[in-house]
Image (cartoon, rainbow, N blue to C red; front, side, top):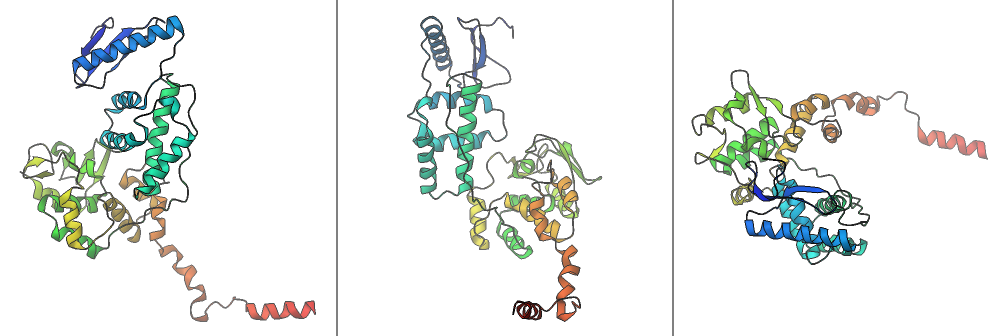
Length: 354
């Protein structure tokens, strides 16, 4: 593509139309229009040119709406692995912010969003994800696009309790037993490796070496490819998948899994197994908890799970208590010979005061 290209055009690496133009102030813009419709892209380009002309010649700064900002924000985030989650949150926020221009989003508006989301039964963690998106979008509108001059201070909710949900071995066996074959395979592999849902469904055979018991992941959450050692349970799962698909290791009726795993089949299996308040990602928590209970160190677990730091791993330290057994036994059955009688000590202190 030539650098002098003007107007709307297509790019081979995007399904959207792109726009390029030089503004009256000399600045050149080149961005995704966020639409697959050429007429909509042309309308957006005309609007950008008109507003730039009015601002440059007459000093009129255009008032941008929340919906305009969302379109541009999504166009920037389109290649993220979490893009569907970003889209979903934007849709959830539309009833609160969709009718506003950006300058109308004040601290009072943010408070109404918090109360509205909480009123729908959402937990503080969900509210904080919504707030994080609002803050990210407004910062981009202020610092990169210069659409607004200021934004409200957005604070996350405090007092949020850390999610502590994992399965016992018996619960895991029940869940696997009532799951359809494709889902049971995903669950077994997640419990054996700690891999995330998208890491599993995106695993390709050319990145699996059963002889060396290793899989290489290129679609990780933190964007860093990593190798995953395969224990016997993981190898058995993969061996049963051989021949189902030429490219992907995990399929449903020989077709790649391109949908969210937590669908009706997942919820039906949970109900049949009698398991409540459990997400597919909690299988990763289960795997980590089992490892710590088995004596795996936090440093080993960090490398196995692909975490970049110990911060996320230290939450599982509470499940390993072997190193505290000696300390716990010091007062066992009166064996703590150095234990001072507190009642006697208090009596002596009382005599001294009298």
